[in-house]
Image (cartoon, rainbow, N blue to C red; front, side, top):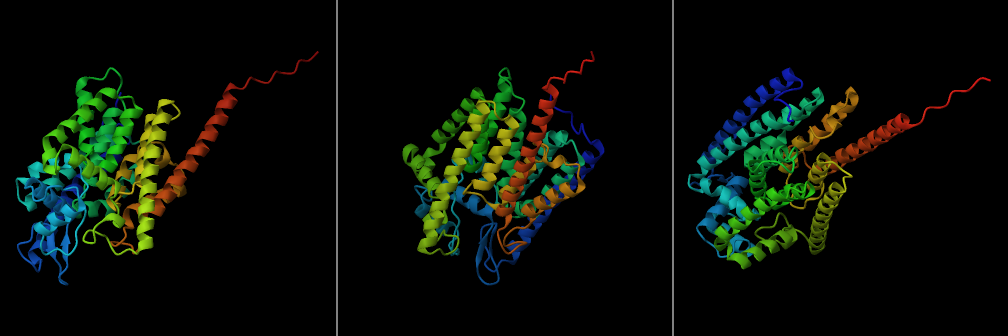
Length: 431
């Protein structure tokens, strides 16, 4: 049975949610007004919305605007093979002739389908609508799933660290997809976790639809795919795969054809690293040795992610871990090993707050340390608030802390179990 809304810590949960209802609309208004003002001050006028010319003449493009331009170029068939890097460069040079560099685009055709309604309105209105939908999704996620599972005040404090963070503000500012994928994943897990073999076709259809939507970003799609396999949820898995097949049938022509487009995308995902990008797309200069190291680490990380997913599925099938433990493991594999990771993806950590007992510590010093570490991961963003990318090291530290605490809890539980089942010592008999 699902818990009632705000069933635990009613007052604190309600107060947090009321504050969140103020924060989300404020972020939407602030980022849209700020972006409009930046557009007006751009040195070069008549640029697409989200593309600016800063005082030194450099062209800066917001992530959301950049990807929207890609989708627009794909819709207008400006290039024959949008998943080929040389065609991506050609498309961007066509859409933004003033640009001196570009970003690669690896979103799936699902993202193109989801973006179609936004392509029918202006860039400014599309960004406004997107941020509103993201804000509504965050409120729905907390109201219907996260807050009802809260069992101790430190979990509310952890939520506060997640929502009042540079990570969330920056994601809203540039319109990154982590805002919506985290919401989709949270609601997906909310529906899948209590699912049984007798669940209705409606529930399974919703799970399948969310799995399909999460496939907009392949690196995130591995999580729901592995969860469905681990739970042996065959019906929603098959429905989701059928939705993906239908999507590809409908849009393959935009990507160069059924077979060619598929292999173009497969090649791109296997070479999505700075060493393989064209000079126009590269994120900084690399020497030959650095390129070799980049390619090696990219392949290693991809292999480790896939191995971790497979291991967690097997552990779930053999009942060595629970569904919650598989979910946590998949999210951590994504956060620590995914070669496609951006700092905004750290926002997914809000889903881990109510999984397990890590953020339910009763020791004030221990929970303060945990919260400070969480804040550092979400707020010490390279190039924004901190000069170096330290978040990956801090995530490993937090993960190690979780593992150590988990092992200690397991030892205590095992000792307690042995004491409970041990036969009582026989009383001495007096003759």
